[in-house]
Length: 97
Image 1: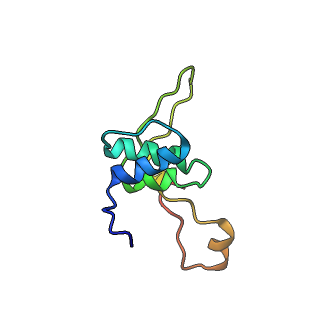
Image 2: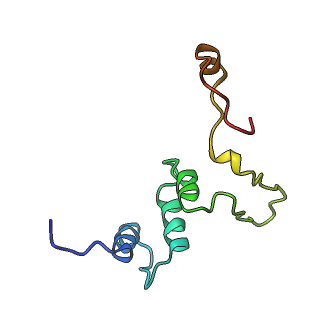
């Protein structure tokens, strides 16, 4: 409504300014995903974002982390709950579960 062009960089910098963080001079898709991960960390959108942009199976190693990620692509979908399968015989379990 203000006539302001809503570019990704402008929107990221609005969030950074509100948080008192240093403003960005440029933004990439990876940078945008990282910003969304920080800003929406308690909103449970990270998984959806990574699936949407084809990066769900990308491993993000953390210092001193010895765990390995399951990179199976079937994990993009959740299993159909057992109770739903029992209630509706026309349903089939998602592949891999």
